[in-house]
Length: 189
Image (cartoon, rainbow, N blue to C red; front, top):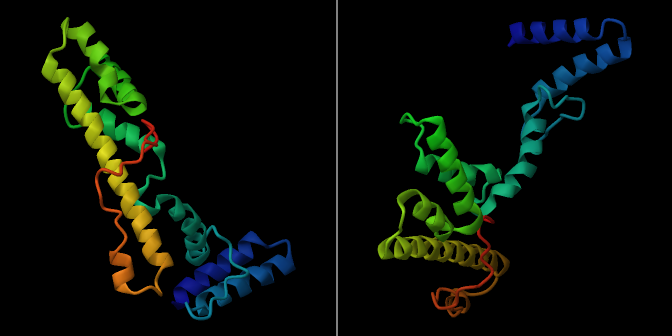
């Protein structure tokens, strides 16, 4: 620990060698940072560039975006579709990657049924079972998104109704599959 202190003090002095006030502030920031605890944080003079405590506070805001299993980056969903069509562990030509990227964009934006014309153009014709399969893929995607939404709503209701009894919460009928909400928008999830 003493070697670390020596290194930190040296850096504080070198970085602020022309300003005594900033030098004193940097040295005290080191001391306050190292003497902090979770129950008594003293990071008011710390810089987010080195202070893990301040970095964690900044990351807490970004973590709100991924609550309930959401994705922080919309591209992750697109890339998931793309790499399922053209896996990274197999060699694919540039033409194949371009085709898979175009199909992934169609699937992401409009659902699986949107690639039927592309498949028809490539193969000359698509059969009945291809159309049925694509429709089922879309229906499954919609079903699981509605299920996820229902769970999130149910979880938020449980959090709001912590004072209610267990029997009151069990009487809410949010698990019926015939109550699907029609607000699904392809590419929004």
